[in-house]
Image (cartoon, rainbow, N blue to C red):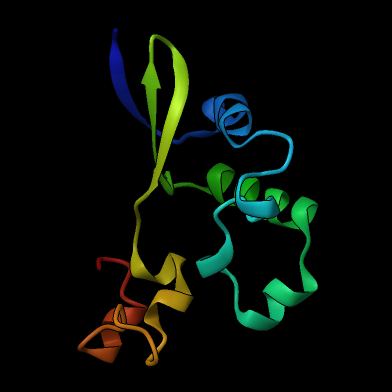
Length: 108
């Protein structure tokens, strides 16, 4: 068994898409839940979510990493600046930043 981890770059889109399957994992979320405001989530659907994360991957920097086992994508972890996931910055969440300026600081 050979396990590797790679940044999710546009060249790995097909692997990401294969990992998430036809439904887009989690009922078509495509890991966009915390990337979209509640209003945007309500207005969205599986295809819009897919388009959103694909555009984000294409824009760079990589929004996370893929885990591969023997060349097949078997896992995903979202990693990136807080500004990429505005819903994590919500005052009602335990993930809210202590310093509000950190919510938009691309270095955090």
